[in-house]
Length: 407
Image (cartoon, rainbow, N blue to C red; front, side):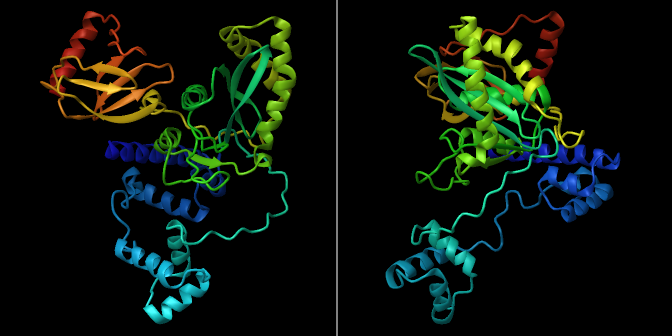
């Protein structure tokens, strides 16, 4: 599973570079703009360009993937430094401890390594700096460079609260996706991202709050844990999309202003139209309100070219879903989410007993079982096996050939 995920991320990164390089060669993008789209420096982009022109896409493969860093400190050394500080130098500043450990204990590591090691072990707390003078953040120059997603709770039918999920472009404030759900969460996030990617393509970064479905935050109000990904974080990493957490309401000012407008306009319109059903509200959003909102409030981007990257050869549905690993029981079933998922007999394998499989749960509640890259069964939200759609004779013949290759 891990190897497939890394390979997928690598392919997306290479496809993104090829798209940016093509536009750079057509002189649509300068070196600085191309580097910004790829999330690297202009100097590094020039290195990548030179390698690509000499050896093609294979030159862009990251040889570090799957290899431990040669500079990584052994676990014993990390434990020794943490224990040394706790037992003998507790209360000493990190800078003082580092200098002392270099002199007395032969520490060879840098101050920054020492500080981070002690912080991760919970021995010291990072110092708090005074906040800088904040200025209005300029918009991104191109569409698709940064996408905002947020949710807000609304009530226009007395006693009935629904969450509105909005995904918008930073460069234009254009609403790309908007819909009501009973409760904001992972499924609604995936649904919004799927609508945006399906209509426009892959984007560069997602800016969101630190809700539990977006990030794991060990301490309330603290920094997010970037090493422990949520399902949303895992999917964005697979798609090579940067995920940026907001640490203050002011940081989400652009999306907050859009929600202020929606609260003032949309809710009143829905009440005036007499809409009390969620499906009807979503139809009104899609066909009436969002087009009019974008016509009135969206602005032109600074640059006409966009950062959207087309999706080629990638099944977005199997990325934007909840992925969890399970072990098959002796009766060829998988227990998941209160359901008993029966694996049907297949031509690929006699049985799957004790095999590790991946359960994909999609935003609409349907599920699928994967053995490696092979989908072995699909299920309805109630756990029953999903009946395949009717195939033509040609499609059936092609399917038989494909199964023979897979055996």
